[in-house]
Amino acid sequence: MVAPKYSRIVLKLSGEALAGSLGYGIDPDVVNIIARQIKEVAALGVEIAIVVGGGNIWRGVAGSAKGMDRATADYMGMLATVMNSLALHDALQKIGVNTRTQTAIEMKEVAEPYIRGRAIRHMEKGRVVIFAGGTGNPYFSTDTTAALRAAEIEAQVILMAKRVDGVYDCDPMTNPGAKKFEELTYIEMLNRGLGIMDSTAASLCMDNKIPVIVFDLNQYGNIKRAVFGEKIGTYIGGESFG
Image (cartoon, rainbow, N blue to C red; front, side, top):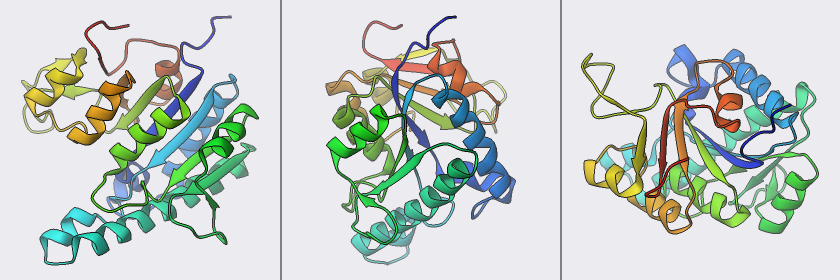
């Protein structure tokens, strides 16, 4: 049997992914589908950490744009990521996946505090670890959280699940002539202003040589395909790909 290409991953899920067709909030059916895919990958012995966004509930940048204090708005966004993380945690536990949620903001009645060594130990024991609460600081996106945690736990790749099948030069939803990129360097991504992740997250990935695979979450089994190194989505890395 062919072994997975990556043995330790960070899976980045947008909050919107959990909303499904509802567009807002959490759709339990969608969360269950995601959980089943994660279970399939965990069963292969792959060590999995997950970062979930909070955009389906609250976006700090949007609140700030309407006059709210930016730090306060961002803290509210961090709490939204905790809600999403707990929903995914529950779905995973119910299908037999041993899961731990760690949060960067202390709330010991709800989740463990984020401790790097403990997170790595959980994964070594076969547990899925969900990182909630962002970095614990305002002004940082959950993309930056994913990049930071990936560097800290020495993940081999960030799998960035989206609602499109990769990175395009313009919005494929509105422009049928949009060109899909099979591969990009970090510098190309930044220079083209493609908006896949913010510059802080991209710099962290570039400095720590962590590749990013952007793929379509709506296609069942894509998480597993990405882990095996199949050519799906868009691969973002250094000057040499693979």
